[in-house]
Structures are given as C-alpha cells and as structure tokens.
Length: 105
Image 1 (cartoon, one colour):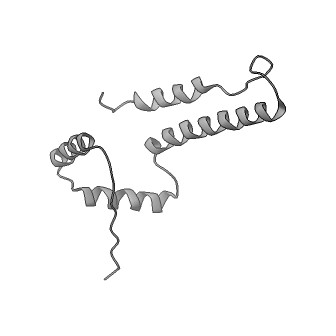
Image 2 (tube, rainbow, N blue to C red):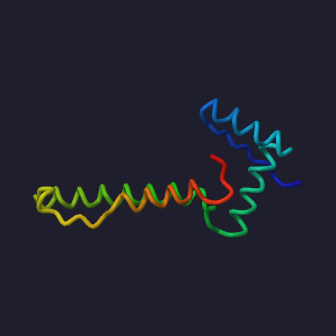
C-alpha cells in the first residue's frame, strides 16, 4: 500500500459550507475531489483554468510593483513615467473567466 499524505486547509467557514453543499448534491467527497485534482495536475503538468486567473492577477501585481520600484530607483515621477502595464487587462481576463459558459453566478 502506498504511503498516505494528509492536507490541512484553512478557508472561511461559509465558503466551506457552500462548497460542501455542492459536493453533497453531486455525491462527491472532499477527498475524492482533491485526489482527482492532483491526478489532473500530474497528468497535465499545469494549473487548471480557474487557478490561472489568480496567477494572471498575481503576475500583473508583481509587474506593477517592479515598475514602481524602477520608477523610484530612477527618481522619476508618475507624470514622467511611461506606464506599459494595464491592470485592466488582468481584470478583464478575470471577468471573462468568472463569466465563462457553464459557471453559475
């Protein structure tokens, strides 16, 4: 028998309750869902689409911080800066993901 690992996850209680309602309705346990997620990660070697939206937001934030550090290092003011980072693109991607077909509001 293979060794067994345990995951301990912290999340808001109301989020857990709402998620558990979906799992119960679908007849899936938390353990089954997490095992399936990890099998998918192993098979595809990449993040699922829902996790990519968070990655895009994080990347946009990191790019903004790097640009701001560069402005400070160069002694520039925001009026002088040529900003090439558009946070609206990341937000637009998030909205497209959030409102994709098959997702309930």
